[in-house]
Length: 93
Image 1 (tube, rainbow, N blue to C red):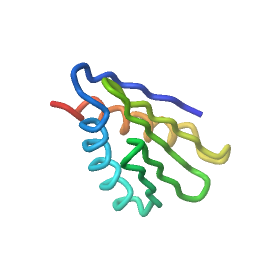
Image 2 (cartoon, helix red, strand yellow):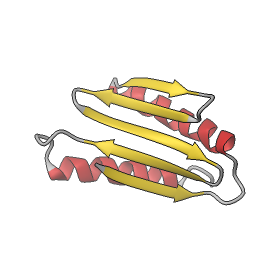
Image 3 (spheres, rainbow, N blue to C red):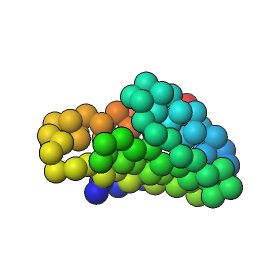
Image 4 (cartoon, rainbow, N blue to C red):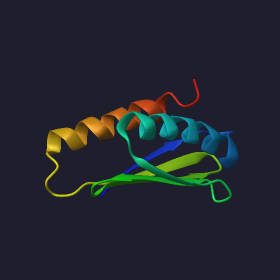
């Protein structure tokens, strides 16, 4: 499992969740992923064929956890992780 955390000082969980939901909705549509979201808990989860990712928003930060099956090559894992990190870095321009 790989964990990514980003801090957004001054942003509350709802503000971060709204941005994360937009990003995850686009990713889920683009990659045909199942996307489950929980507005009240400010959480979401995407999955497809053993690959899964979940995020949780709290006041001032978001945490993303990624799980890949062993058959997924390391280069693909790294590409996905870097793409998510880029999106998180640009969440609040």
